[in-house]
Image (cartoon, rainbow, N blue to C red; front, side, top):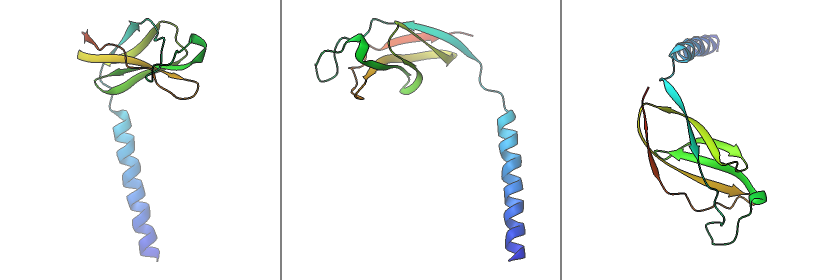
Length: 111
């Protein structure tokens, strides 16, 4: 049993050292990019969507959610890496029903 607990402690120490090394690797350089939008007025099912019913606005780039904010104030910022990104937005209402996705835009980010 003592050998097993020592092996466990050694593995735990190795894992801790690995996590420490990984956390020291700097993130890729990013740029803060602001997207402006006109809010959706209906849900994906076609029912009306008022401003007061919008719980969150989300931004997806290259299929990954990169930003989320409460409400819908007309702009949304995200940290994007250098390159070309295909982005679209969507709203979620207070009942967790989504709006249709916005038109997709291509955003070219240069550092």
